[in-house]
Structure formats: structure tokens, C-alpha cells
Image (cartoon, rainbow, N blue to C red; front, top):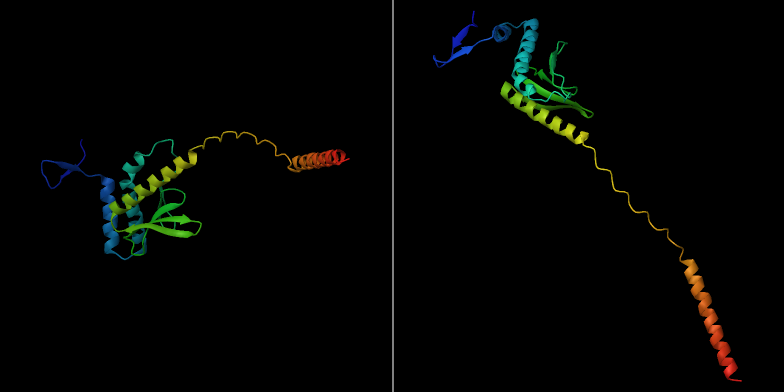
Length: 184
């Protein structure tokens, strides 16, 4: 048995439809038609799952040895799609807008906000790239500085001064003695 196929705009190119995608779309449509809070929460989770699936190609490109990112959907009072420990995506107040935020020591900042998943995928891509570059910079070991030649100890300048003073005084005394003896 093959997967069900629905023809797209071009009948010669069939498009594969996944049941999971169809279920998610059906949940969103049901939440749009009804105003029940539970359905709205289900719609939030469904939208986050769609975005999570849209992020799969991005995270498939992240090398395995980089363990900065821990992507997953949390099912709390406010469903969130976590990108890493400090950044996540949640739905806006209207439950249709994606809000990509980062928690900092100065509070939460909004990195991107849009109804369009492509815009949020682009923002997450930029964020992932910046985090990977930050990791590279943190992992670089700066070269050890060359050992500077030890400075020669500074000699006191008092001793040469005193030696010069004594020699000068002795020379003057000798000159005065020579002049005194000559005049006799």
C-alpha cells in the first residue's frame, strides 16, 4: 500500500500528505470555530507542533557534538516550544501569533513576533547561528603569552651620585692643596 496522495496545483506532480499534519490542521480549524478554552489550548499546542516540524530541517543541520539546543514542547499552563534553556516560542494573546522570546538577566526580550511560521523559522535560524558562533568564541583557547624577559633590577641612583660627589670633592681638595703648595 502506498501513502495517500493529493494532487497539488500541477496534476503531474502528486504531493504526499501526512496524517499528522492533517490532524493538526483539523485541530486548528476546530479551535477557530469554537471559543472553548480547551480547544484554544489544543490549537496553541497544534500550532507549536507545526512550527516544531518546520524547524526540523534547521536542527538536522546542527552538528551532533553541539549540545546547546534542547528543543521540545512543554505542556504547562502556557504551552511553549523550547529552543534552548533561555529561548522559547509561545503563542501571543490572540493565540495565532508566534512570539519568539529570550530570557535574560534583565528580563524577557522578544526576538521575533509573527503570524507566519516562515518568519519565526528565519528568526530561530539566526538565533541558532548566533549561539553557535558564541560557542565557538567561548571554546577558543587564547594562546599563552610569551614569557617576558625579566626586567633587570633597577639600581638605586643614590650610590652613583654619592660616588661622584666624593670624587668631585676629593678632586677639588687635591686642586686646592696643589695650588696652596705651589704658592709657598
